[in-house]
Image (cartoon, rainbow, N blue to C red; front, side, top):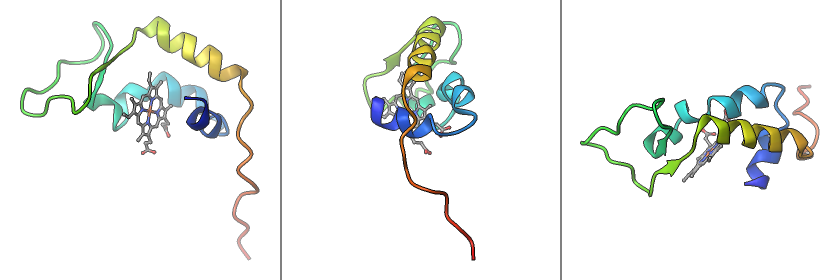
Length: 80
Ligand code: HEM
């Protein structure tokens, strides 16, 4: 997980992105958070084994991501 996390960590709003990852595609298709996420639509079941996390797990992931170095992806594109 560290690779993509280091890239997302570069964003000023990285914390909000992790806090709400389960409502952003592709995650709703396979993520289960007890008493938070709605049940899967029977017509489109999860394509992989569901990822089951709690809100406490997400807090722990955010605390971990806070400790990692943002990836160095180079300078932003310079418009000329
Ligand atoms: C607890 C597990 C996971 C967490 C906390 C997590 C978190 C995140 C976050 C924060 C992003 C960046 C979203 C943004 O740009 O705003 C992301 C992107 C993404 N994740 Fe996950 N993820 C998890 C599991 C997975 C799994 C299991 C898959 C695939 C099987 C997956 C596929 C993706 C993809 C494809 C993107 C890029 C989406 C895009 O840029 O449009 N993630 N994830």
